[in-house]
Image (cartoon, rainbow, N blue to C red; front, side, top):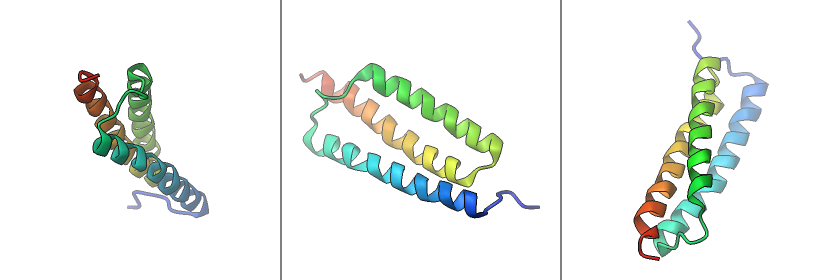
Length: 92
């Protein structure tokens, strides 16, 4: 029983997943280090988080490894930014 169909299309998806997910991580790190959330929009973060949850569900239903991996990691990253915005936003 094959769970994931890994072909050249999925390899393109995995490459895109690595690039887009890794591009998001420096913002999480910078926010964590500086605790500056003034430039982050809470409504944007909430909408983005909900959208990523739907992309993850879609990836699971489509059995797309690249979508599952990218969106699972991005959910964690965006959740951290939401947490930082709520926690550190009170200081400003």
